[in-house]
Length: 104
Length: 422
Image (cartoon, rainbow over all chains, first blue to last red; front, side):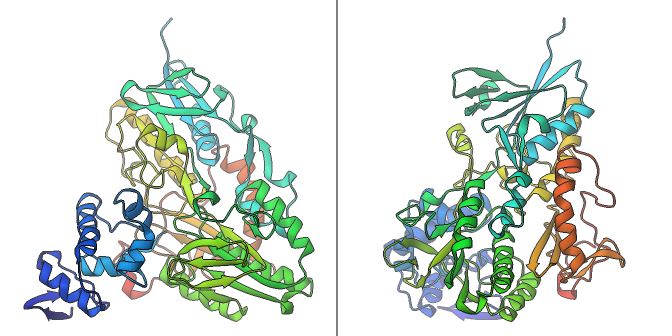
């Protein structure tokens, strides 16, 4: 399992760069992972990341787009502005959760 | 006289009809009365919708009266449900009447919601924008296909999960074959547009089916999350501003559970009922069970799944009545024929733990069906299935050799997938 050090914290990641141990995650790690995607985290980003964390805690899976809209109150358009090209995947990565499973 | 207890089934589609027919044979009907409620008098053989646009099935092939498919000693009620009141163990109908229950089975399915996507039901709806997941939709598409002279045909999926997730691929393969037969393939550009990163949801099958799309010269656009249909420009537009132009759009609209689930206050964001994926007991209340497309279980929304679930749920209803612990026996088993055109087909067999892999089915090493391989017999199996559906499946009679538990035998399982308990 590969490891990397981001803003002073060593994290375990999979081959696609998703964290495999959420206990290693902190806000500095998030900022570092976001920077790798060319994103500077601001308040609006944190609102999304915090919703993912809360919902993951409750459901055990990364919420999909519709759940972000309906339960999180975050519009799809805004998600694409905040996390361009695949917002759910990117936000999940920065929030330190697994890559969202494709549906069945 | 002793008051009978009530078992109430909401929905007389594939799953609800099978449950009624299982339970009327297994329950003590001196103590229990079984009622089933549905608002629509017609039962559709939904897999047949796929064949209608190509004139392969007629209207009559796919319709039967619902009431007749539910066997004797079950009370059939034609009515629309307003909502379930789990605290009072009762169901409120839209006509104001009330049905009390001791056990409730929710089998209200899922349906396409084209109005969920901006512009989809706009000026082009059923003129150059079509779907084939409803009887009306399949008929409208058949009329338009007959007039087709060539151009850009776009087959598109809005959002997962969808009912019968292989159907859009099958439609694409059949369109390729059908256009070829009519000498229109060379003037038709076929594009397959999907929100997924591959051709299918499961990696091994995605690779094989993706290769087939390639072979048939079908363009694929991946990771496309639709924002709107632009009826003026005749293009679908994604949230990241990509556009795919069409002359005919055949889309699979957003699928959602019955609005009744939302009115009852226990659905998720797509109106699916939170359900224990192994016992099929709802997470709403212990006397509410869920089957078929209405559940939020992470397996395909398909008739084969409902068939396998029905066997487990029947056993668990009987256990619930006796006060015994429920069996966590449903493994997510799904079994899907895929039409690939030219009289051939594929067969997929998978569950929660193992994605579709190559092999032979149902008899290991023998078949006659080949898993994840293209063959004529798979296609014939799909055609034979219509008879099996009406005469065996809905009547809750057993299908020889096919168990509700997926068999790991006869499958060539790649090493990296061995995590599944074999």
